[in-house]
Amino acid sequence: MIKDIAQQLLQDDDILCGESVNPRFLEECRQYLMDMKYCDVPGEYLTLLRYVNSVRSENAILLGVLPGDELNDIVAVNERYQLGGKQLVLGQTDLDILVYHAESGDYQVRNHQDLSLAEVFDSLEEALSYWFSLKEQK
Image (cartoon, rainbow, N blue to C red; front, top):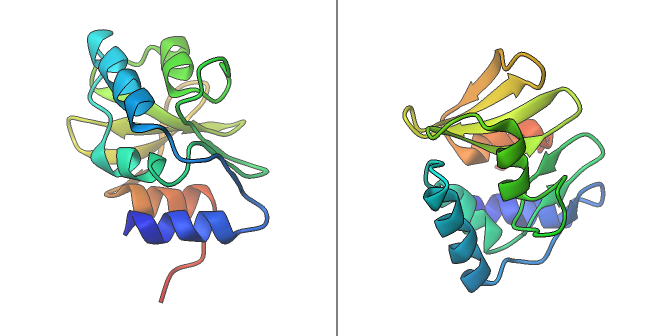
């Protein structure tokens, strides 16, 4: 469950989480992305942003709604990558990007340079567990 993942992220001393997104800003961001012909933001990601806005570890970043922060803002990063309407960049490391693929409904880890596929996850929870090396919940 996304709430459990958010709690685990918040409790990890090696991970920094921003405060939840104001729902108005979240809707404005979502509408802007759709107006610019990007796919809709996945519901799991929207739910997570209600708990944490941007997540950073030593190795990985989950983007947030951070106007003015071009390195960590979902809009700025997607404008830089321009992957197309069916894909949305949600995170990045020095080597990879985390992409939501709307057509297949999965989350993909792709090589930063050539966009080759490295991993595929059925849910954001699985992708974040991998992305941030979270321990499995019991």
